[in-house]
Amino acid sequence: MSVRLDLTPFRRHRDFRLLVAASTLFYLGQAISYVAVPYQIYTLTGSNTMVGLIGLVELAPLLVAGLWGGALADHVDRKRMLVLTGVAQVFFTSLLAVNAFLANPRIWVLFAIAPFLVTAAALQRPSREALLPRTVDHDELPAANAISSLGWQTGNLLGPTIGGILLASVGAGWCFTVDVLGVLAATGCYLALADYPHREETTPPSLRGIAEGLRYALARKDLLGTYVVDIAVMFLAMPLVLFPALAATIFAQPELLGLLYTAETVGALLASTFSGWHPRIHSYGKVVVIAASLYGLFIALAGQAPTFWLCCLALAAAGAADMTSAVFRMTLWNQSIPENLRGRLAGIEMLSYSIGPLAAQVRAGYTADSWGVRRAITVGGLASVAGVVLAAVAFQDFWRYDARTDRHLLAERERRAAHGEAGSSLTET
Image 1: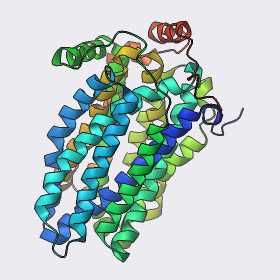
Image 2 (image 1 turned 180 degrees about the vertical axis):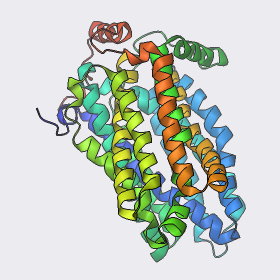
Image 3 (image 1 turned 60 degrees about the horizontal axis):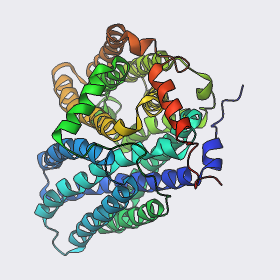
């Protein structure tokens, strides 16, 4: 039984290759800017509080644009949304580059541009997520999601490294410039996509349309289970904000801090690389619960690791478990959500995995100050396991989910067959 990554969707479908290339370039550029923005704020102000405030000004636009972007994705041309929001990101990131190249960069520019930049990205993502299932065959989605996640992890692994090198050698301006070039190339990939008109009557974007998507999500207990598991894991277990203290005060090796940040990504890359077994699994709910529980356990072990390298090993194992959980959650969503609701549900999904990390920073910081760094990490990991188990008990449809018998998945497969969809007529090699 092969466990190697199944590249069949990548080989067969041109538009899927374009989406993977575009999303990898976007994630790479965003990761570079993610390093540059806080660095520039700190060098201009010397204040950690100011660095934290940039996330606060991004929160409201993320919430509003994520939901509205999902509503737009279910009505307007998704390819056009991808291109227009890509152009917007090029424009706003270019302004950051111009400001960074000034002799005296203005701090207010960073705070003024950040809401617009996060709005463009949040408007874009639901269209990208909703379009991906139409570029491959229905049964190829498990492999397609693993390939897509591999591109995301590659961008996240290389981006901070490239950003750090650019900051140290040529400054923040070139970080934003590289981001602009990457977004331009990604937008070109989107422009080269075939047209994907909506195959059913669409719902114009409105609060009523967003509420319809929310009602659908709440009515499906299997979907609710995936959201609750994701939020529980991120809110209770994510230890990123504690890594500086872990490296400096617990292991007394602050120079190795970067390895703590990349350890989970390395594990996730390995999990994606050896994901060939995914298409043979049908009990998605059980896999998600087991993998998410393992994530919490490995985070708890990382908190108690006696050496730095054992901590990194535990974090890498946690990253592999987290990626496995994420891929099966994405497959459940992409195979079973109706086409006419996919954009709005993608917006809801985006919020579920965007809000958790922000809240986790507050939770982790408070518990570390109260209990100590090691105990905060360990208790958070174990608490997330309890949260995942409770979600499995509370949402039995999620725990028992089987891709061979789920009525939502079978209905979506029949709808695709009725429309003659097998990827796209223009995406075959």
